[in-house]
Image (cartoon, rainbow, N blue to C red; front, side, top):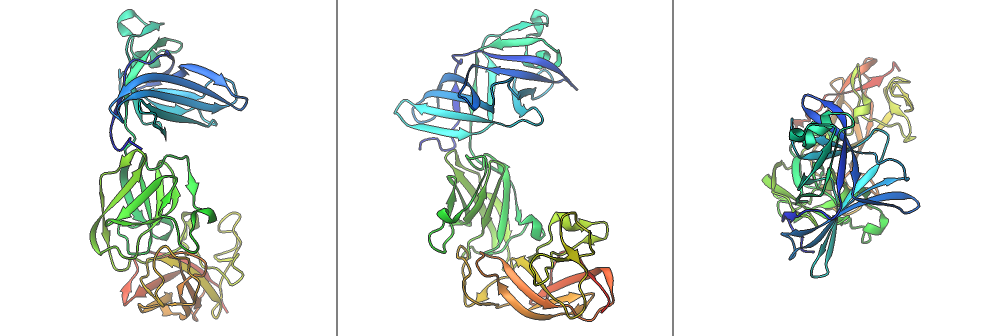
Length: 409
């Protein structure tokens, strides 16, 4: 493919684009959109604007297609980017779905397609109704209900990925630092060329996970990461085991190019225990501690709607998951599904209410990648619904503030 981080500039379109004002506030207008030439294919309506373009692969024709289910009124809305601005961003009316696809048909015969809403258009020559002749602009029309602006458009298109944040997986603490073989979430724009995709068995090579998914790849410190999920706004990866500690660059690449490097700090370990946001209630953040039935969590009954829970008792075994706890023996590198019994090489301790628990297992969980499992026995501690759960790795305390629920014995 030829479109690698280069802006395509397109000249006046071959179809008109009409915006009809809906009103707005603070100078930001909103309009409904009639986009180019529309055709219903029996399932979706596809509205297309085409224009000559230059700047990528020798130039050719750009096609911008707005697609939505059914053959009713378009659900796409255009919002002016600033008071009086002549450029817009797209949105969908609440309760609707749709996509914007940009295709570059290069003069060489190559076609590169992007799923995006990241392009800019201006009117070449426009005709307005409902406003005075001197106010024929996107911004003014958007602020004036039932006013219209119509005509051919021109503009630019750039699908280069852009990283805005990279964190340790959010359900495991979400801190800014990462560790080798841990799980990382990357946020930004243009990070994928598909609506969303999660890896499946077809993406694996035996027990080895994919380093490319939906045409998106990620490197950390120059080493390929293992890609589990992609969407335009978020990518989830397992960090490679061989990445060096210290400050390292993260780069996301797609058919639209390679992002600028985003800097992260890599520590030897960056441990976090599973504690999803839905388990955070008035009492505090509950750790996701499972009973051996793998369906009931150690929380007061009814804490989280739809989640089976009960208080743990001293002597009960609980199963807790984590990421970022470091190497295991025998060694199982990132990108490989765990298929053998193993144990942490670092010293690990977990405490309930400050009392150490007996750890029956600490290692990677079977049939997963980079997911640690801790089987622990609840010590004899006073009952309570906000008993602190803390842990150490090599004597260093974890940073999460977690609780669990313990009944009297």
